[in-house]
Each structure stands twice: as structure tokens, then as C-alpha cells.
Figure 1 (tube, rainbow, N blue to C red):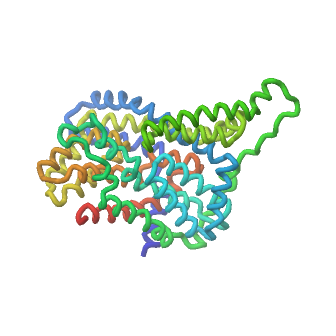
Figure 2 (tube, helix red, strand yellow; figure 1 turned 135 degrees about the vertical axis):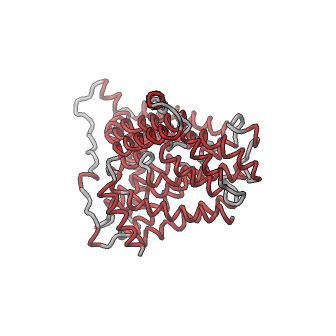
Figure 3 (tube, helix red, strand yellow; figure 1 turned 60 degrees about the vertical axis):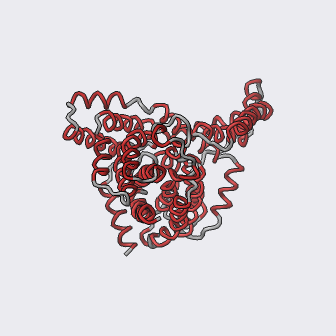
Length: 438
């Protein structure tokens, strides 16, 4: 039965899911028409919200490009490649490769989602080189599936937001420490149940040998390492200088050490990018080696640069028109104290399809769901995590966050989303049960 369900979704996605760019365009039309029909805004007002929103996440777009580029460049260094080769030597077939990839990705995403996305893609690429007759799309889907727990982990933006002074609903709930959200017993049970069981889901979903799609060898080709020039000039000496590279690398290490001493293990997205970048600089040994690695890595960033602004436009329509608030309020209207966290989760999953940003999601749902939860007597920590769960859950069928991983893996959204739909179903069952009974 599981094979039949998986095959159904895989075939459905391969036949009917458009390219990720067209997916964003279609979502734009849906958001526009839904807002036009329900919010009382005029078409020109909605066009204005959309146009203004296009540039609302440019800074975040650049951050994601840097995650992709610096992560890919780091992975192409010899020391990191050796670690990946060692891990990739363990599995013997597609099922074992997917089990390893989804587990490593899940653990990595629990600690930091940016790190988890990059690690998943790089490990999948190396597995494709080492495991004979492996279904590459299936294993990349396993790697992306580890992302389904990111908002319940240490880098989750909503639980970290309500643990900080000056957050959106501080006057209502005060400061909520992470011991009540990320490190609560119920969140750890839900999250680690997903992490531990996903490898077995992928084991049972593994396509039979006759359905395995062969890998295009061109996807796995790495650029040849360029040799030092035979004629040395001052310019070539500087480009190949390990001394200059070492001094520059030391500056980054000193900065990072000072940051961690002051802030502890509080890894913002910018710090994760910094770690990727300076680790890559150090491990590539010379300035020119790192330049070449980045030039190669940037080739996969086109999807991010093209599509992320479109989601900024969608977010502009959803938030400025009030459509996202209407969705959240509708779920609130028929909730009880027992079901409120669950319906908050469902509302978050729907809104995430159009506002696939943890921060944007919190701006929409926080001021609505938190007061409603207080009125019903529901713990604000559970309400906040219900929003966070919804945000992470439908990422499995929303290409926004898959783009950095797909850029590194050199695949398209149709190659993975059929399998990720099964992850959506499985994780949704676990989260729903946890919110109702834990």
C-alpha cells in the first residue's frame, strides 16, 4: 500500500507539477483572486500590495544565495569531501542511502536549518557517486525531508522570537523561554519521533529496482582542480599565497570566537553563512582556489534570484490585504481549548503555502492566535509552536525552501516532491497526534 501511495504521488507530481518558477506565478494568481473575492480590496490595491512586496525579501534572498554558494564552496574543499566520502561509503543501496541522508539531515536541521539544507544536498551528491544504481531524486527528497522539523529546532525563528525582548506579543505573554518551547518534553517527543521514524518511512517507500531512474552523470561532474601557473608573477604569487589566505582566515576565526564568547551558541543566519564562508576560505588553502569554488557554486543560484522576489509579492498580497488574517481567524472561530493548537497548526500550514517565511508567518498569525489562545486558556507556548509546526510542515510541498538544496543537487522540483508528499502526510499525523494528546 505504501509503495502504491508513493508511486501515485510521484507520477502525479511528475505529470502535473510545473517548474518552481511557474508554481510561484500560479500561487500569485491564486492569492490575488482569493484576496479580490474575500477582502474587499480593489484589483489595483492588490496590484500595489503585490508590487511593493516584490522587494520586501531582497535581503533574505541574498542570504539564501550566500547559504547555497558558501555551503557548496565549503563542500568542494578536500577535507569536507573526505568526510562526505566516508559517510557515503556506508550505504549499499538506495534504501540505505535515503535512510542515512534523511537522518543526518534531520539531526543537522534540529541544530540549524541552513546547515541542514546544505549538508543534505552535499551528502546526497556524494551518495550518488558511491552507491551503485541509486535513485538520486529519491535520496535528494530524503535529504530535503529532514527539513520538516526545522522550526521545532534550535534555530526555529518563532520560539527564538518569543524568547527575546521586544517581540510582537510581549505585552500579552511576556518572555517565553526556550525551555517551554524548543526544549519542552512535548516538542522533543514530536520532533525526535519524526527524525527517528523518517528513515523507516523512506526504507519502505524505496522504489523497486526496475523503477529507479538512472542518474545523469553530468549532474555529478566536479570542475577539475587548476594547477599553479608555470610562470610566476606578483599577481599569481598573491593568488596562490597560503600566507595571505591564512591571515585572512585567522581574522574570521578571531571574529567568530569573540561573537560566540559574547552571544553563546546563538547562530543567526548571518553567522551560519559566515561559518560556511570562512571555513571554505581556510580549507581551500589559497585565495584563488576559493574564488574558483565560488564561481562554480554560483551557477546553481539562478532559481533563488528569480523566484524569491515572487514570494515577496505573494506575501505582500496575503498580509497587506488581510487575506492571511482571514484564514487564521476562520480556524480560530470554531476551535475549542483542546483543538486550538491543532487548528492553529492547520492554519499555519495553509498560510505557509503563500507566506513561506517563519518571520512573515509570525507577523500574520501571532497577533491573532495568541490572544485567542489566551481567551480559551491555552498555553501560549503551545500556540506559538502550533504556528511553527504549520510553517515547517507544508514546506514539503512548497518549493520555496527546496530551491537552495535543488541548486546544489542540480535537480528540479518534480524530481523530489512526490516523495516529499509522503513526508508531509507522515509528519502531519505525528504533529497532529502530539498537539491533541501530549
